[in-house]
Image 1: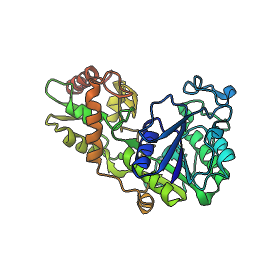
Image 2: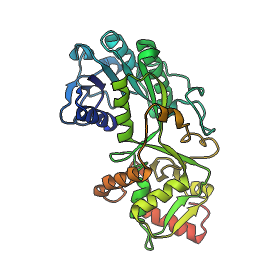
Image 3: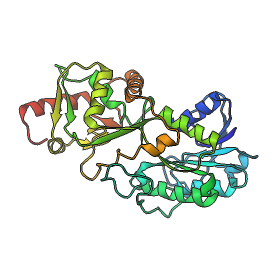
Image 4: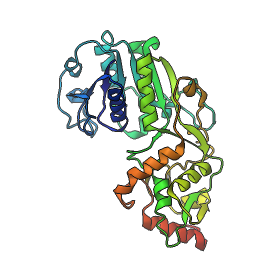
Length: 352
């Protein structure tokens, strides 16, 4: 198979490229080349898919200028796979490659859905309104940007030769967000004198993590089979307490688990989900009861079979270990914050 990967130098794209090469495919990556290198055996074509007047986001301003990026990848393609979040990229790919590509796969996101309060959602659920610009202007419109990308893909390549893969939360080794790596790391390195770890007490919250390697391998499968349609590409659903128990077992944690009320955590200035002073995987209820609880059966029927969460978290922990203490993570608590939070919980403190 001749695979054109639009991207390929960042996390998921690199995994896709590496797996495709391992399977004997001819892989070309069209990318700015600013996010890293491509795996061995991948042909990198450095080009910018934006025009100079649309470069208004930090990750595109300094990219090399190529007036016609797609002219740098001539010929016919068995499959094109795009990981972009910018609708203009998809429209450009459709215009340039529609007659040269047999199949198009877009990595979208489960963030496209308008509501996230009901578990068991499917791809027929209402979507957010699409943005009307070529570039996503900020992370606050990520879901809306992906909706516009989906629409451009289907309009440009047709539903019969297009895959829309709405990925759930991606985790595993290489997760720079630390959302999948924080909890195994924290249980392995509690940061408290007696090894206690504070966790959110949210038994009704579901979690769903898809290993980056499983997602990448399945996307290559789809390109090989030319699987068309819209699929929620999600991992196994389990409750947050079950997820934390797996992380604790992977880390070999023997200390006390201190369960904290969500309202108390918010009063201490602890944030949901990601960012500074956050607890990953924790989301507010009831509005996010279905965010990591998408229906799994359609993805399994489409051939996506995730590995056990324990393996994903163990490998995420192994990747996190050389990075040292949690001081420069995109998510989670520092050791000082983790220790202070445990002390405040035990003392009965009510505010931060």
